[in-house]
Image (tube, rainbow, N blue to C red; front, side, top):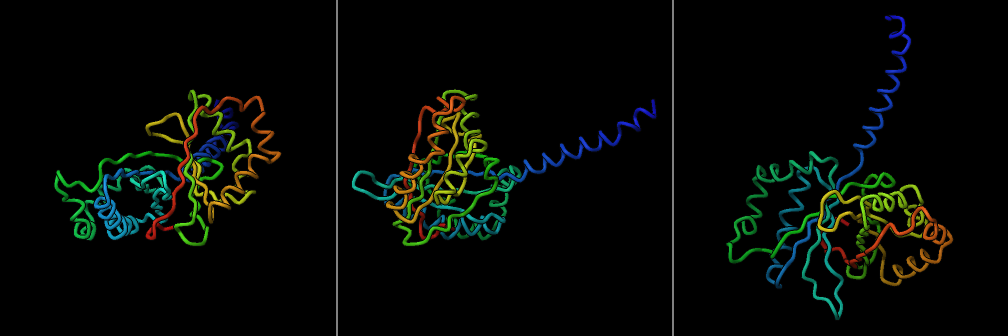
Length: 262
């Protein structure tokens, strides 16, 4: 009996090592929180800008969180910008879970953010906060802050959310990005993706979200035209195993605020 155990012991060690290695690799995937602040007027917009710029982002950096993106709707004749989007990367769920406790112990945060923290009930700094928690795709496990240059007001940060009919079709759409080559196609066309992620908790599940970035609208339109006309997309979009894996796509065209990290 002992001989049999000794014989299989190296194999057991190998299996455990492989499993632990896989677990370690899984842990390296970023988590993202997308916080959306809905605002009712210019006053709230001003209060939130001051809070995010002077209090919240500096506090996140003290907590070891870098590359926080802050975005607003691109202005046009049909849409009033009444939301602020804050994208926060986390190295782990523990970092996400403990952030509020760390902020509560940060004296500089309490002092600088007093106006926001102690706002009167009838003068809130926002109408509501929506929060989405995500985990990075295996095909792009860490955030890549955009290196797009040029006037921030001209830049296009396109945030997309793809909803699927069922959990199974959702997983199929995720696989289309990771294994099917959709991520590689975007990269080959210069889409400058910031992240691709599975939504773990949100209002429109099952769904995934991702963000691509462009210097201006002309560049954005050219990349998408190349995307849809590419041979690779023709193959993916007609492949029977990827058919009907999405039933709704929402896209938001944003620009980074002057105090956004990228």
